[in-house]
Length: 257
Image (cartoon, rainbow, N blue to C red):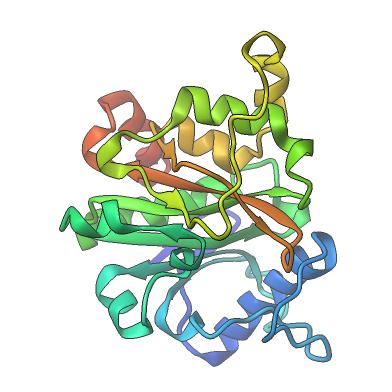
């Protein structure tokens, strides 16, 4: 799959050079910008990688005006259920008990490592990635999309307003409600009712999480503090069958346009 726009090319990684370019972008965002680390981070080569990368499909947003090796300005990695079995499980399975999703027997797609070069944020770049993602979901007949999304910083109380709002208003229904594993579980319902400020909470919620909520997405129960990545994570779940017509139109509008 390759899609051309007036500014970008959107396609999947074709070779090791494409993957390395995506990992280089991830290093700039997750390591240099957000302060993350990990056992397979290569500081000398400036690559953010992990052991599951070979099992993912890597969706790339490419700026054709940039030199090879620095041409990837947006990335998303996608793991289908059948590939997860080969990989030994989903990435987010180390943080969340995914039993409700797996037990449902529906086609699953895990999303992760979503990032954009700072110079390409705030415009149409993310919509181009989402348009390609929508086409992929249709082609692969995916039922449920899920994955962890992050608040910047590992101090959970710094995100208390937003986490409380997510828990109280956007908690997944029982059949989709994954739960942070007991050994890492952090409660999200942190602010007493009278002290919750919904507007403040929503302003403090990362744009990617708000985008999924707008599409009808939910969050799992409990947060996970990822000290290595310097983030506080929640698990997002989007059931394509529960999306209404207006939500589907948002999700696919760039694909149609």
